[in-house]
Image (cartoon, rainbow, N blue to C red; front, side):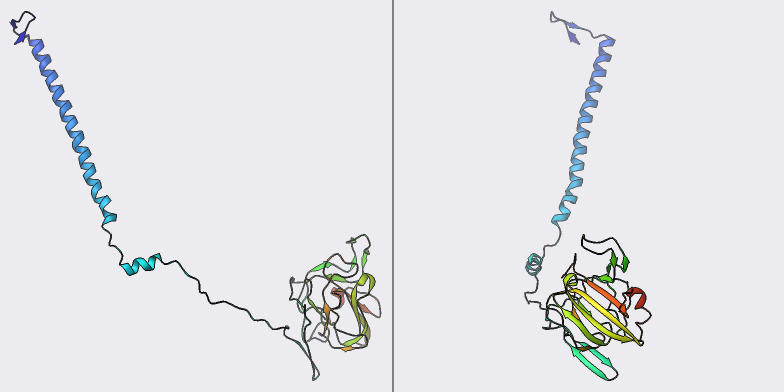
Length: 263
């Protein structure tokens, strides 16, 4: 029954009864939907609880393990050292039963630069001025002058193993020049040899001042120390200017030496 504005009950029509039923069903569906949503959130929350609990369930390390894990990695406090003798190992020469020990002078340096430019044979009676191949900064013959006062024709080769590298005698011979006052050559040495019945001179220039290990008139053996690579005289950098002069005429060392450097 529905009351009118005057307070009298008015019988409901079929239309109004149907509308009330539809409204009641809609309200019921809304309440059920809200209940399902709340229930779904609760289920998701409950499902997340075990995942959150897993990290908390890991076993705790023992006090000793925890202390070990916190200890930083340590480096041994024992000092490390490298002991090097006052002089490098001597160069030992042995030719026909004759031997000589030539200690390297103070200031001698190992090879700073090497290259596959030549192969030396330490048992050969004729050798390169270095025991191993080294870079070539300027070849024999015509060239672009490296400085305004430098020659456009090069009578030797410029070898660059590094400042202070030891230079060895090309062959047995006698020292004819050994000076620190060589003008454009700077500190240099000339040794006269007899090779295959021919007189040959070898020249070593631009060495460190005071590094010459020979004296004029001294007889030297192949491989004996001559001096140290330097930058004296007319030079644009540390190198050995090396000349070979058969019968006094300069030739290309890279042509003349290879067939003669042999055991």
